Image 1 (cartoon, rainbow, N blue to C red):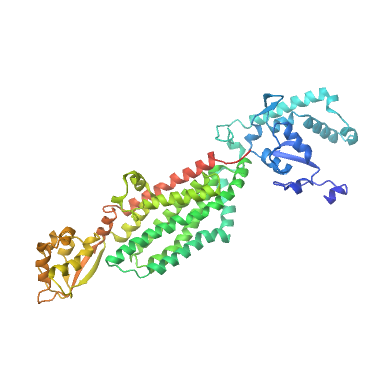
Image 2 (cartoon, rainbow, N blue to C red; image 1 turned 60 degrees about the vertical axis):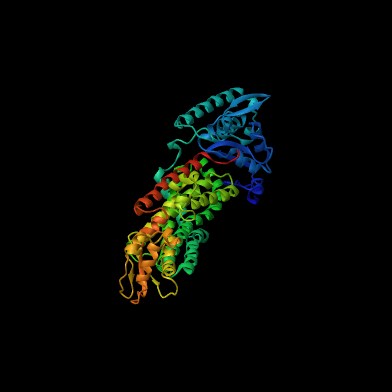
Length: 526
Protein backbone atom coordinates (compact mmCIF):
# COMPACT_ATOMS: atom_id res chain seq x y z
CA UNK A 1 0.00 0.00 0.00
CA UNK A 2 2.88 2.38 0.78
CA UNK A 3 4.38 1.62 -2.64
CA UNK A 4 1.05 2.39 -4.30
CA UNK A 5 0.77 5.66 -2.39
CA UNK A 6 4.16 6.65 -3.80
CA UNK A 7 2.78 6.36 -7.33
CA UNK A 8 3.87 2.85 -8.21
CA UNK A 9 1.54 0.34 -9.82
CA UNK A 10 1.17 -2.76 -7.61
CA UNK A 11 -0.45 -5.95 -8.87
CA UNK A 12 -1.41 -8.58 -6.31
CA UNK A 13 -3.26 -11.88 -6.70
CA UNK A 14 -5.12 -13.18 -3.66
CA UNK A 15 -7.61 -16.00 -3.20
CA UNK A 16 -9.38 -15.34 0.11
CA UNK A 17 -8.63 -11.81 1.34
CA UNK A 18 -9.66 -10.70 4.79
CA UNK A 19 -11.80 -7.59 5.16
CA UNK A 20 -8.78 -5.51 6.24
CA UNK A 21 -6.64 -6.66 3.31
CA UNK A 22 -9.45 -6.17 0.80
CA UNK A 23 -9.98 -2.57 1.86
CA UNK A 24 -6.39 -1.78 0.83
CA UNK A 25 -7.14 -2.44 -2.85
CA UNK A 26 -8.07 0.64 -4.87
CA UNK A 27 -9.05 -1.34 -7.97
CA UNK A 28 -10.18 -4.96 -8.23
CA UNK A 29 -10.27 -7.62 -10.92
CA UNK A 30 -12.56 -10.50 -9.96
CA UNK A 31 -12.31 -13.82 -11.75
CA UNK A 32 -14.95 -16.49 -11.86
CA UNK A 33 -13.68 -19.81 -13.19
CA UNK A 34 -10.75 -18.00 -14.80
CA UNK A 35 -12.91 -15.40 -16.56
CA UNK A 36 -13.25 -11.73 -15.69
CA UNK A 37 -16.56 -10.87 -14.06
CA UNK A 38 -15.56 -7.46 -12.69
CA UNK A 39 -12.84 -4.89 -13.31
CA UNK A 40 -13.23 -1.59 -11.56
CA UNK A 41 -13.06 0.25 -8.28
CA UNK A 42 -12.87 -1.73 -5.04
CA UNK A 43 -14.54 -1.36 -1.64
CA UNK A 44 -18.16 -0.16 -1.83
CA UNK A 45 -18.16 0.30 -5.61
CA UNK A 46 -17.69 -3.41 -6.30
CA UNK A 47 -20.34 -4.22 -3.71
CA UNK A 48 -22.85 -1.89 -5.34
CA UNK A 49 -22.14 -3.43 -8.74
CA UNK A 50 -23.10 -6.96 -7.63
CA UNK A 51 -26.06 -5.70 -5.63
CA UNK A 52 -27.34 -4.17 -8.88
CA UNK A 53 -27.17 -7.65 -10.42
CA UNK A 54 -29.63 -8.96 -7.84
CA UNK A 55 -27.37 -10.23 -5.07
CA UNK A 56 -28.36 -8.46 -1.83
CA UNK A 57 -25.65 -7.51 0.65
CA UNK A 58 -27.91 -8.25 3.61
CA UNK A 59 -26.47 -10.68 6.16
CA UNK A 60 -22.78 -10.09 5.39
CA UNK A 61 -20.32 -8.37 7.72
CA UNK A 62 -17.97 -7.05 5.07
CA UNK A 63 -17.50 -6.75 1.33
CA UNK A 64 -14.77 -9.41 1.14
CA UNK A 65 -17.00 -12.07 2.68
CA UNK A 66 -19.89 -11.00 0.43
CA UNK A 67 -17.79 -11.33 -2.72
CA UNK A 68 -16.33 -14.70 -1.71
CA UNK A 69 -19.82 -16.14 -1.26
CA UNK A 70 -21.37 -14.39 -4.26
CA UNK A 71 -18.69 -14.71 -6.93
CA UNK A 72 -17.43 -18.18 -5.94
CA UNK A 73 -18.46 -20.91 -8.38
CA UNK A 74 -17.34 -23.39 -10.99
CA UNK A 75 -16.56 -23.07 -14.66
CA UNK A 76 -20.12 -23.83 -15.77
CA UNK A 77 -21.64 -21.77 -12.96
CA UNK A 78 -20.03 -18.70 -14.47
CA UNK A 79 -22.52 -19.01 -17.35
CA UNK A 80 -25.54 -20.15 -15.33
CA UNK A 81 -28.50 -17.76 -15.83
CA UNK A 82 -29.93 -16.13 -12.72
CA UNK A 83 -33.39 -14.70 -12.08
CA UNK A 84 -33.10 -11.06 -11.06
CA UNK A 85 -36.01 -8.97 -9.84
CA UNK A 86 -36.17 -5.51 -11.38
CA UNK A 87 -39.06 -3.24 -10.70
CA UNK A 88 -41.16 -6.09 -9.37
CA UNK A 89 -40.77 -8.23 -12.47
CA UNK A 90 -38.56 -11.30 -12.68
CA UNK A 91 -36.22 -11.09 -15.68
CA UNK A 92 -33.76 -13.73 -16.72
CA UNK A 93 -30.31 -12.11 -16.86
CA UNK A 94 -27.05 -13.70 -17.86
CA UNK A 95 -24.38 -14.80 -15.44
CA UNK A 96 -21.67 -12.67 -13.90
CA UNK A 97 -19.30 -13.10 -16.84
CA UNK A 98 -21.94 -12.34 -19.44
CA UNK A 99 -23.45 -9.53 -17.38
CA UNK A 100 -20.05 -7.91 -17.09
CA UNK A 101 -19.37 -8.22 -20.83
CA UNK A 102 -22.70 -6.54 -21.56
CA UNK A 103 -22.23 -3.81 -18.96
CA UNK A 104 -21.25 -0.17 -19.35
CA UNK A 105 -18.31 -0.86 -17.06
CA UNK A 106 -16.93 -3.45 -19.50
CA UNK A 107 -17.44 -1.13 -22.49
CA UNK A 108 -15.62 1.64 -20.66
CA UNK A 109 -12.74 -0.71 -19.81
CA UNK A 110 -12.54 -1.85 -23.44
CA UNK A 111 -12.32 1.74 -24.65
CA UNK A 112 -9.69 2.44 -22.06
CA UNK A 113 -7.68 -0.60 -23.18
CA UNK A 114 -7.96 0.43 -26.82
CA UNK A 115 -6.72 3.89 -26.00
CA UNK A 116 -3.75 2.39 -24.15
CA UNK A 117 -2.89 0.28 -27.17
CA UNK A 118 -3.13 3.37 -29.39
CA UNK A 119 -0.83 5.33 -27.03
CA UNK A 120 -3.32 8.15 -26.61
CA UNK A 121 -3.54 10.56 -23.72
CA UNK A 122 -5.10 8.72 -20.76
CA UNK A 123 -6.59 11.88 -19.30
CA UNK A 124 -8.97 12.10 -22.26
CA UNK A 125 -9.92 8.45 -21.87
CA UNK A 126 -10.92 8.88 -18.25
CA UNK A 127 -13.33 11.67 -19.22
CA UNK A 128 -15.20 9.56 -21.74
CA UNK A 129 -18.87 8.93 -21.05
CA UNK A 130 -20.48 5.81 -22.36
CA UNK A 131 -23.78 7.52 -23.04
CA UNK A 132 -22.02 9.81 -25.51
CA UNK A 133 -20.74 6.77 -27.42
CA UNK A 134 -23.95 4.90 -28.19
CA UNK A 135 -22.58 3.57 -31.43
CA UNK A 136 -19.45 2.22 -29.74
CA UNK A 137 -21.54 0.64 -26.99
CA UNK A 138 -23.67 -1.18 -29.52
CA UNK A 139 -20.55 -2.46 -31.28
CA UNK A 140 -19.04 -3.65 -28.02
CA UNK A 141 -22.27 -5.34 -26.98
CA UNK A 142 -22.29 -7.26 -30.27
CA UNK A 143 -18.67 -8.25 -29.73
CA UNK A 144 -19.48 -9.38 -26.19
CA UNK A 145 -22.32 -11.53 -27.45
CA UNK A 146 -19.98 -13.18 -29.94
CA UNK A 147 -17.44 -13.83 -27.20
CA UNK A 148 -20.17 -15.32 -25.05
CA UNK A 149 -21.26 -17.66 -27.83
CA UNK A 150 -17.65 -18.72 -28.38
CA UNK A 151 -17.19 -19.47 -24.70
CA UNK A 152 -20.42 -21.45 -24.60
CA UNK A 153 -19.32 -23.50 -27.63
CA UNK A 154 -16.29 -24.66 -25.68
CA UNK A 155 -18.51 -25.89 -22.85
CA UNK A 156 -21.17 -27.93 -24.62
CA UNK A 157 -20.90 -30.99 -22.46
CA UNK A 158 -23.42 -30.24 -19.75
CA UNK A 159 -25.48 -32.60 -17.66
CA UNK A 160 -27.73 -32.39 -14.62
CA UNK A 161 -26.38 -31.78 -11.10
CA UNK A 162 -28.25 -31.91 -7.79
CA UNK A 163 -27.15 -28.49 -6.57
CA UNK A 164 -26.16 -26.21 -9.43
CA UNK A 165 -28.05 -27.90 -12.29
CA UNK A 166 -24.85 -28.56 -14.26
CA UNK A 167 -21.47 -30.19 -13.92
CA UNK A 168 -18.21 -29.52 -15.58
CA UNK A 169 -17.37 -31.05 -18.93
CA UNK A 170 -14.17 -33.03 -19.32
CA UNK A 171 -12.62 -30.05 -21.15
CA UNK A 172 -12.97 -27.94 -18.02
CA UNK A 173 -10.27 -29.94 -16.20
CA UNK A 174 -6.56 -29.54 -16.78
CA UNK A 175 -5.66 -33.17 -16.04
CA UNK A 176 -7.10 -36.61 -16.57
CA UNK A 177 -8.89 -38.48 -13.80
CA UNK A 178 -5.84 -40.57 -12.94
CA UNK A 179 -3.54 -37.59 -13.36
CA UNK A 180 -5.55 -35.65 -10.79
CA UNK A 181 -5.54 -38.61 -8.43
CA UNK A 182 -1.77 -39.06 -8.73
CA UNK A 183 -1.14 -35.35 -8.10
CA UNK A 184 -3.43 -35.29 -5.06
CA UNK A 185 -1.91 -38.46 -3.58
CA UNK A 186 1.57 -37.09 -4.15
CA UNK A 187 0.73 -33.76 -2.56
CA UNK A 188 -1.80 -34.60 0.16
CA UNK A 189 -0.64 -38.13 0.85
CA UNK A 190 2.96 -37.26 1.70
CA UNK A 191 1.79 -34.19 3.60
CA UNK A 192 -0.54 -36.37 5.68
CA UNK A 193 2.14 -38.99 6.34
CA UNK A 194 4.38 -36.27 7.75
CA UNK A 195 1.61 -34.78 9.88
CA UNK A 196 1.76 -35.77 13.55
CA UNK A 197 -1.99 -35.40 14.13
CA UNK A 198 -2.84 -37.55 11.11
CA UNK A 199 -0.44 -40.31 12.15
CA UNK A 200 -1.48 -40.04 15.78
CA UNK A 201 -5.13 -40.76 15.04
CA UNK A 202 -4.25 -43.69 12.77
CA UNK A 203 -0.96 -45.26 13.88
CA UNK A 204 -0.68 -43.91 17.42
CA UNK A 205 -4.19 -44.96 18.38
CA UNK A 206 -3.53 -48.47 17.03
CA UNK A 207 -0.44 -48.79 19.23
CA UNK A 208 -2.32 -47.60 22.31
CA UNK A 209 -5.17 -50.07 21.74
CA UNK A 210 -2.72 -52.92 21.10
CA UNK A 211 -0.84 -52.31 24.34
CA UNK A 212 -4.05 -52.02 26.36
CA UNK A 213 -5.47 -55.23 24.87
CA UNK A 214 -2.21 -57.09 25.48
CA UNK A 215 -2.26 -55.99 29.12
CA UNK A 216 -5.68 -57.62 29.57
CA UNK A 217 -5.47 -60.72 27.38
CA UNK A 218 -1.77 -61.62 27.41
CA UNK A 219 -1.20 -65.30 28.17
CA UNK A 220 -4.86 -66.34 27.86
CA UNK A 221 -5.32 -70.09 28.33
CA UNK A 222 -6.78 -72.61 25.91
CA UNK A 223 -9.24 -74.16 28.37
CA UNK A 224 -13.02 -73.76 28.59
CA UNK A 225 -12.58 -70.37 30.24
CA UNK A 226 -9.74 -69.31 27.96
CA UNK A 227 -11.71 -70.11 24.81
CA UNK A 228 -14.42 -67.64 25.70
CA UNK A 229 -11.75 -65.14 26.67
CA UNK A 230 -10.14 -65.53 23.26
CA UNK A 231 -13.52 -65.08 21.57
CA UNK A 232 -13.96 -61.81 23.46
CA UNK A 233 -10.45 -60.75 22.44
CA UNK A 234 -11.28 -61.28 18.76
CA UNK A 235 -14.45 -59.22 19.08
CA UNK A 236 -12.58 -56.38 20.79
CA UNK A 237 -9.98 -56.53 18.00
CA UNK A 238 -12.83 -55.96 15.55
CA UNK A 239 -13.97 -53.04 17.71
CA UNK A 240 -10.49 -51.52 17.71
CA UNK A 241 -10.40 -51.69 13.91
CA UNK A 242 -13.86 -50.17 13.52
CA UNK A 243 -14.59 -47.71 16.32
CA UNK A 244 -11.29 -45.82 16.11
CA UNK A 245 -12.36 -44.41 12.73
CA UNK A 246 -14.82 -42.10 14.51
CA UNK A 247 -11.97 -39.72 15.28
CA UNK A 248 -11.64 -38.93 11.55
CA UNK A 249 -14.98 -37.09 11.47
CA UNK A 250 -13.88 -33.56 12.47
CA UNK A 251 -11.03 -33.55 9.93
CA UNK A 252 -13.35 -34.45 7.05
CA UNK A 253 -15.88 -31.76 8.02
CA UNK A 254 -13.08 -29.19 8.25
CA UNK A 255 -11.90 -30.14 4.75
CA UNK A 256 -15.35 -29.63 3.23
CA UNK A 257 -15.14 -25.87 2.49
CA UNK A 258 -11.78 -26.34 0.77
CA UNK A 259 -13.13 -29.28 -1.21
CA UNK A 260 -16.19 -27.32 -2.34
CA UNK A 261 -14.16 -24.29 -3.37
CA UNK A 262 -11.60 -26.34 -5.28
CA UNK A 263 -14.33 -28.38 -6.92
CA UNK A 264 -16.13 -25.22 -8.06
CA UNK A 265 -12.86 -23.94 -9.50
CA UNK A 266 -12.51 -27.14 -11.54
CA UNK A 267 -9.30 -28.13 -9.73
CA UNK A 268 -10.32 -31.80 -9.77
CA UNK A 269 -13.26 -34.16 -10.13
CA UNK A 270 -15.20 -35.54 -7.20
CA UNK A 271 -14.13 -39.04 -8.18
CA UNK A 272 -10.47 -37.97 -8.04
CA UNK A 273 -10.96 -36.70 -4.51
CA UNK A 274 -12.61 -39.98 -3.48
CA UNK A 275 -9.86 -42.07 -5.08
CA UNK A 276 -7.08 -40.17 -3.33
CA UNK A 277 -8.88 -40.61 -0.01
CA UNK A 278 -9.17 -44.35 -0.66
CA UNK A 279 -5.47 -44.64 -1.49
CA UNK A 280 -4.22 -42.53 1.42
CA UNK A 281 -6.42 -44.21 4.02
CA UNK A 282 -5.75 -47.68 2.61
CA UNK A 283 -1.97 -47.27 2.72
CA UNK A 284 -2.10 -45.73 6.19
CA UNK A 285 -4.28 -48.62 7.38
CA UNK A 286 -1.59 -51.10 6.31
CA UNK A 287 0.90 -49.41 8.61
CA UNK A 288 -1.57 -49.39 11.52
CA UNK A 289 -2.37 -53.09 11.10
CA UNK A 290 1.30 -54.11 10.81
CA UNK A 291 1.93 -52.47 14.19
CA UNK A 292 -1.29 -53.53 15.93
CA UNK A 293 -1.43 -57.20 14.95
CA UNK A 294 1.92 -58.57 16.16
CA UNK A 295 1.49 -56.97 19.58
CA UNK A 296 -1.97 -58.46 20.08
CA UNK A 297 -1.63 -61.75 18.22
CA UNK A 298 1.56 -63.13 19.71
CA UNK A 299 1.08 -61.81 23.25
CA UNK A 300 -2.41 -63.29 23.59
CA UNK A 301 -1.62 -66.88 22.54
CA UNK A 302 -3.71 -66.93 19.40
CA UNK A 303 -3.32 -69.61 16.72
CA UNK A 304 0.38 -70.46 16.46
CA UNK A 305 0.56 -70.63 12.68
CA UNK A 306 2.02 -68.11 10.25
CA UNK A 307 -0.86 -68.44 7.76
CA UNK A 308 -3.40 -67.78 10.51
CA UNK A 309 -1.40 -64.72 11.52
CA UNK A 310 -1.36 -63.39 7.94
CA UNK A 311 -5.12 -63.95 7.67
CA UNK A 312 -5.58 -62.10 10.98
CA UNK A 313 -3.70 -59.10 9.52
CA UNK A 314 -5.65 -59.19 6.26
CA UNK A 315 -9.02 -59.38 8.01
CA UNK A 316 -8.34 -56.48 10.37
CA UNK A 317 -7.03 -54.32 7.50
CA UNK A 318 -10.15 -55.04 5.43
CA UNK A 319 -12.37 -54.29 8.43
CA UNK A 320 -10.58 -51.04 9.15
CA UNK A 321 -10.67 -50.00 5.50
CA UNK A 322 -14.41 -50.69 5.28
CA UNK A 323 -15.01 -48.81 8.55
CA UNK A 324 -13.05 -45.79 7.27
CA UNK A 325 -15.08 -45.63 4.07
CA UNK A 326 -18.36 -45.97 5.98
CA UNK A 327 -17.26 -43.22 8.36
CA UNK A 328 -16.38 -40.92 5.46
CA UNK A 329 -19.71 -41.67 3.77
CA UNK A 330 -21.76 -40.92 6.89
CA UNK A 331 -19.75 -37.80 7.71
CA UNK A 332 -20.04 -36.52 4.12
CA UNK A 333 -23.82 -36.97 4.26
CA UNK A 334 -24.02 -34.96 7.51
CA UNK A 335 -24.49 -31.18 7.40
CA UNK A 336 -22.16 -30.44 10.33
CA UNK A 337 -19.69 -32.02 12.73
CA UNK A 338 -22.26 -32.37 15.53
CA UNK A 339 -24.61 -34.53 13.46
CA UNK A 340 -21.70 -36.48 11.98
CA UNK A 341 -20.27 -37.07 15.44
CA UNK A 342 -23.58 -38.58 16.53
CA UNK A 343 -24.41 -40.49 13.32
CA UNK A 344 -21.09 -42.34 12.94
CA UNK A 345 -21.08 -43.93 16.46
CA UNK A 346 -24.76 -44.80 16.02
CA UNK A 347 -24.09 -46.72 12.81
CA UNK A 348 -21.07 -48.45 14.36
CA UNK A 349 -22.99 -49.39 17.52
CA UNK A 350 -25.86 -50.93 15.56
CA UNK A 351 -23.34 -53.06 13.69
CA UNK A 352 -21.79 -54.13 16.98
CA UNK A 353 -25.12 -55.14 18.51
CA UNK A 354 -25.63 -57.35 15.47
CA UNK A 355 -22.03 -58.56 15.44
CA UNK A 356 -22.84 -62.00 16.84
CA UNK A 357 -21.01 -61.71 20.17
CA UNK A 358 -22.92 -59.34 22.42
CA UNK A 359 -26.16 -61.02 21.33
CA UNK A 360 -25.79 -64.54 19.94
CA UNK A 361 -27.09 -65.16 16.44
CA UNK A 362 -30.13 -67.18 17.53
CA UNK A 363 -31.09 -64.53 20.10
CA UNK A 364 -31.09 -61.51 17.76
CA UNK A 365 -34.65 -60.12 17.32
CA UNK A 366 -36.22 -60.95 14.00
CA UNK A 367 -36.48 -57.28 13.02
CA UNK A 368 -32.68 -56.97 13.26
CA UNK A 369 -31.85 -60.21 11.42
CA UNK A 370 -31.36 -58.31 8.16
CA UNK A 371 -28.58 -56.20 9.70
CA UNK A 372 -26.94 -59.30 11.15
CA UNK A 373 -26.90 -60.84 7.68
CA UNK A 374 -25.13 -57.89 6.02
CA UNK A 375 -23.12 -56.42 8.90
CA UNK A 376 -19.45 -56.16 8.01
CA UNK A 377 -18.68 -56.33 11.75
CA UNK A 378 -20.43 -59.70 12.03
CA UNK A 379 -18.66 -61.14 9.00
CA UNK A 380 -15.31 -59.80 10.18
CA UNK A 381 -15.81 -61.38 13.60
CA UNK A 382 -16.85 -64.61 11.87
CA UNK A 383 -13.64 -64.64 9.79
CA UNK A 384 -11.45 -64.16 12.87
CA UNK A 385 -13.31 -66.81 14.88
CA UNK A 386 -13.06 -69.43 12.14
CA UNK A 387 -9.40 -68.60 11.65
CA UNK A 388 -8.80 -69.21 15.36
CA UNK A 389 -10.98 -72.24 16.14
CA UNK A 390 -11.56 -74.23 12.94
CA UNK A 391 -10.23 -77.83 13.10
CA UNK A 392 -8.72 -77.25 16.54
CA UNK A 393 -8.97 -79.34 19.69
CA UNK A 394 -8.35 -78.01 23.16
CA UNK A 395 -7.61 -80.73 25.76
CA UNK A 396 -8.53 -80.02 29.36
CA UNK A 397 -8.58 -82.19 32.47
CA UNK A 398 -10.91 -82.29 35.47
CA UNK A 399 -9.84 -83.60 38.88
CA UNK A 400 -11.93 -86.46 40.26
CA UNK A 401 -10.44 -86.27 43.76
CA UNK A 402 -13.69 -85.03 45.24
CA UNK A 403 -15.79 -86.30 48.08
CA UNK A 404 -19.48 -87.04 47.73
CA UNK A 405 -21.71 -89.25 45.68
CA UNK A 406 -20.75 -90.38 42.23
CA UNK A 407 -23.65 -88.40 40.79
CA UNK A 408 -22.50 -85.16 42.41
CA UNK A 409 -18.92 -85.73 41.31
CA UNK A 410 -19.96 -86.30 37.74
CA UNK A 411 -22.15 -83.23 37.89
CA UNK A 412 -19.24 -81.05 39.02
CA UNK A 413 -16.96 -82.45 36.35
CA UNK A 414 -19.21 -82.20 33.31
CA UNK A 415 -21.99 -79.72 33.94
CA UNK A 416 -19.89 -76.63 33.22
CA UNK A 417 -18.74 -77.91 29.86
CA UNK A 418 -22.19 -79.01 28.80
CA UNK A 419 -23.78 -75.90 30.20
CA UNK A 420 -21.81 -73.50 28.02
CA UNK A 421 -22.18 -75.71 24.98
CA UNK A 422 -18.51 -76.59 24.61
CA UNK A 423 -18.83 -80.29 25.53
CA UNK A 424 -21.27 -82.83 24.17
CA UNK A 425 -22.08 -86.37 25.17
CA UNK A 426 -19.97 -87.56 22.25
CA UNK A 427 -17.00 -85.53 23.53
CA UNK A 428 -17.38 -87.12 26.96
CA UNK A 429 -17.56 -90.58 25.43
CA UNK A 430 -13.99 -90.05 24.17
CA UNK A 431 -12.70 -88.88 27.55
CA UNK A 432 -9.61 -90.55 29.05
CA UNK A 433 -8.19 -90.96 32.55
CA UNK A 434 -4.77 -89.54 33.28
CA UNK A 435 -3.95 -92.80 35.16
CA UNK A 436 -4.82 -94.89 32.13
CA UNK A 437 -7.80 -96.39 33.96
CA UNK A 438 -10.60 -97.55 31.69
CA UNK A 439 -14.25 -97.04 32.59
CA UNK A 440 -17.66 -97.77 31.17
CA UNK A 441 -18.22 -94.85 28.81
CA UNK A 442 -21.19 -96.20 26.86
CA UNK A 443 -23.68 -94.29 28.98
CA UNK A 444 -22.00 -90.89 28.38
CA UNK A 445 -22.80 -90.68 24.68
CA UNK A 446 -26.48 -90.22 25.50
CA UNK A 447 -25.99 -87.60 28.20
CA UNK A 448 -27.32 -84.09 27.69
CA UNK A 449 -27.50 -81.02 29.87
CA UNK A 450 -31.05 -82.05 30.77
CA UNK A 451 -29.78 -85.32 32.14
CA UNK A 452 -27.26 -83.51 34.30
CA UNK A 453 -29.85 -81.04 35.52
CA UNK A 454 -32.07 -83.92 36.61
CA UNK A 455 -29.23 -86.03 38.10
CA UNK A 456 -30.20 -88.73 35.65
CA UNK A 457 -29.23 -92.09 37.20
CA UNK A 458 -28.50 -93.82 33.90
CA UNK A 459 -26.02 -91.19 32.73
CA UNK A 460 -24.30 -90.31 35.94
CA UNK A 461 -24.29 -92.97 38.60
CA UNK A 462 -22.92 -95.99 36.79
CA UNK A 463 -20.23 -94.03 34.95
CA UNK A 464 -19.27 -92.16 38.09
CA UNK A 465 -18.93 -95.37 40.06
CA UNK A 466 -16.78 -96.83 37.29
CA UNK A 467 -14.45 -93.85 37.32
CA UNK A 468 -14.20 -93.67 41.10
CA UNK A 469 -13.54 -97.36 41.60
CA UNK A 470 -10.51 -98.47 43.59
CA UNK A 471 -8.51 -98.17 40.36
CA UNK A 472 -8.51 -94.38 40.49
CA UNK A 473 -9.03 -92.44 37.27
CA UNK A 474 -6.95 -89.51 38.51
CA UNK A 475 -7.82 -86.58 36.21
CA UNK A 476 -10.49 -86.96 33.55
CA UNK A 477 -9.26 -85.40 30.29
CA UNK A 478 -11.62 -84.24 27.55
CA UNK A 479 -10.91 -82.49 24.24
CA UNK A 480 -13.10 -79.49 23.38
CA UNK A 481 -13.48 -79.14 19.62
CA UNK A 482 -13.14 -75.73 18.05
CA UNK A 483 -16.27 -76.40 16.01
CA UNK A 484 -18.22 -76.46 19.31
CA UNK A 485 -17.11 -72.88 19.95
CA UNK A 486 -18.11 -71.85 16.41
CA UNK A 487 -21.45 -73.59 16.75
CA UNK A 488 -22.19 -71.63 19.91
CA UNK A 489 -21.82 -68.38 17.92
CA UNK A 490 -23.79 -69.65 14.92
CA UNK A 491 -20.71 -69.94 12.71
CA UNK A 492 -20.48 -73.70 12.21
CA UNK A 493 -19.94 -74.73 8.59
CA UNK A 494 -18.78 -71.29 7.44
CA UNK A 495 -15.62 -70.56 5.46
CA UNK A 496 -13.23 -67.93 6.76
CA UNK A 497 -12.42 -66.77 3.23
CA UNK A 498 -16.09 -66.44 2.36
CA UNK A 499 -16.64 -64.43 5.55
CA UNK A 500 -13.74 -62.17 4.63
CA UNK A 501 -15.21 -61.86 1.14
CA UNK A 502 -18.47 -60.53 2.60
CA UNK A 503 -16.48 -57.90 4.50
CA UNK A 504 -14.63 -56.92 1.33
CA UNK A 505 -17.94 -56.74 -0.58
CA UNK A 506 -18.95 -53.84 1.67
CA UNK A 507 -15.96 -51.77 0.54
CA UNK A 508 -17.21 -50.76 -2.93
CA UNK A 509 -20.65 -50.06 -1.47
CA UNK A 510 -19.25 -47.71 1.18
CA UNK A 511 -16.95 -46.05 -1.39
CA UNK A 512 -19.94 -45.47 -3.67
CA UNK A 513 -21.93 -43.94 -0.81
CA UNK A 514 -18.97 -41.69 -0.04
CA UNK A 515 -18.83 -40.54 -3.66
CA UNK A 516 -22.59 -39.94 -3.90
CA UNK A 517 -22.62 -37.94 -0.67
CA UNK A 518 -19.84 -35.67 -1.93
CA UNK A 519 -21.32 -35.47 -5.41
CA UNK A 520 -24.87 -34.50 -4.52
CA UNK A 521 -24.82 -33.17 -0.92
CA UNK A 522 -22.71 -30.03 -0.76
CA UNK A 523 -24.20 -28.20 2.25
CA UNK A 524 -23.08 -24.78 1.05
CA UNK A 525 -24.84 -21.44 1.19
CA UNK A 526 -24.89 -19.17 -1.82
